[in-house]
Structures are given as structure tokens and as C-alpha cells.
Image 1 (cartoon, rainbow, N blue to C red):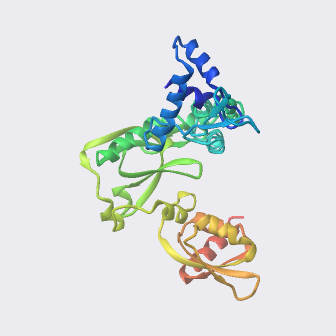
Image 2: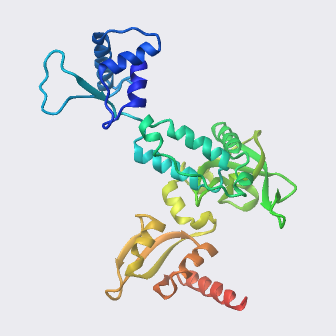
Image 3: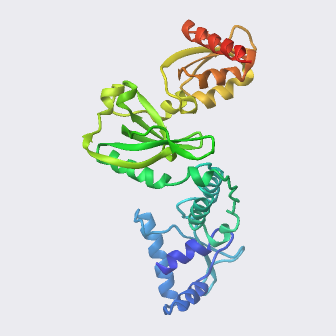
Length: 336
């Protein structure tokens, strides 16, 4: 296991090692081993990897260029068999560093843990600075504790109670209502740079709602209240989260409808990015436009999304949604 950890920590395709270096490493831990034993251990690690054993390790070996093997020839060894590759670790670190709901201190701790999964030679490259937002320390308070309490309730099939918070004019988080919310939790999702709970609130009708996890306080799983089956609310046992999140722009809830819109061709990537590959695309009335049909929750956020494209985006159907969009635009004009 010392050899396994050494290869993971100190080798890659640009930094191989030899048996003598491994022997010296073992001696630094007061372990004596012959070159023959070390070679056998390396072969064992490689064999275990081929067998699918989690203790195994895929190890590459090679000779110097233009050198043929014969007894006594120096061989080099390295591994790239890590849980995450370099680009994946950079992506994870970048995501943590950019988050608005993870405090600067917690972000630095998480980044240090992520960097520990790389080799010693990659650690220095995975060093994205954390940009501290003064609000983030407030918003990040107890996020992980809250998430853990919610998972306990989900696993135990129980409802939860909590106070829901909102910012006041002094930029402090205070209780939105004096009484506790009681909801039935189903999923925790990361969307729009925030952690949301998808749940059922009996006081808000027969539909799912979304609540920010960082805005919850004093979460308590309720042993006396069994969670309502999700099938009773949506008609099926589970959500297709990918499709669900595409429909809910900025996680706003509301009625989902099938909408057809006409866009200029330059917006096709924007439409697919927003609504996913389930969107139906067909050519428009001329070579410069296309029609897109998709399911979306009708909300002010959807109308705001449409508005940003001006005349390049047009709602075709249903008529009810067109009318609601027109009313929203006129209302905005009247407020000027």
C-alpha cells in the first residue's frame, strides 16, 4: 500500500519512478524490501486492477528510448489511474470557487480536499483563487447541516419543519413568517448557483415547490408525519430531473405548458442550452428562422427570458400564453 500511494502521489506520464527510488521511499518509512519484492508488489497491484479489485492499480512501465530489455536494465514506472483526471479536478475547483453559496473559508477547505486527489506535480496547477463575496458567509451558513437533515428525512420518508428566511432592508436574514413551514422533501438539486429543495407544501396546492436550502433554519425531520408519496402529486414514482430543471427557468414554479416559438437562426444554441435536447426544432417560414416546441413553466422568468431577445423571438402558441406575455409587457411599460 505504501507503493500504491507513492505511485499515485508522485508519478504520472511526465514523472515516472524507478525501483531504487521506491526502495528508498520504503526505507524512509523504516521498511526494508528487495528490488525483487518491490517488482513483485508492482505486478500484484497491476494484476489486482485487471481483476477489478479496488485495491489494484493500473501501472505503466517502459524503458529508455532505443533501449532493449535485458537483466539489469533500468525500467520506469508510473500511473495515471486516479479517481479524477486533471481536467475534472480543475472543473470541480472552478465550480466551488465561483459558488455564491459557499463561504470563502469553506471553499478553501473544499478546494484543498479536491487538490489532494491529484499528484504532487498537479497540485500547484490546481490553484484557482476564491473570490470572497461578503454575503456568501451569511448565505453559506449551515448549508451542509441543512442538506444533511433533509437527506435524513428523505431516507426516513418523513416530512420536515423549518423557518424560512429572507433578507430585510438591513441585509440581514430574518424569518419570513413566524410559524414554521412543514413540507414533504423529495430532491436536493443544484441550479442557478444555489441549492434547492424540491418538495410538496400542503398549503400551496397540489404541486411541487422549490425552496432555497441556504434560507432554511432549524430543520427538523418530523417522525409523526410520513412523507406523501410523490406519485400522488405528479402521477409517477420519480422525476426526470434533467427535463424538470430545463422547464423551470430560475427554478420558478407554475403551470407547465407546451409552447411553440419562432426564433432567428442565431438563437438555436441558446434555445437548446435552455430547454435541452428534448426541444423539437423545425425550419421556419423563411431561411432565417426556425420554430421550436418545448415544455416550460409559464412564469415571469419565462417572459423575461423571451424579452431579452426582442423581435428575434416570438411566441406562436398557445394563444393564452401569447396574451399573458402581452399583458406582462404592457404592465412593464405602464410602470415606467
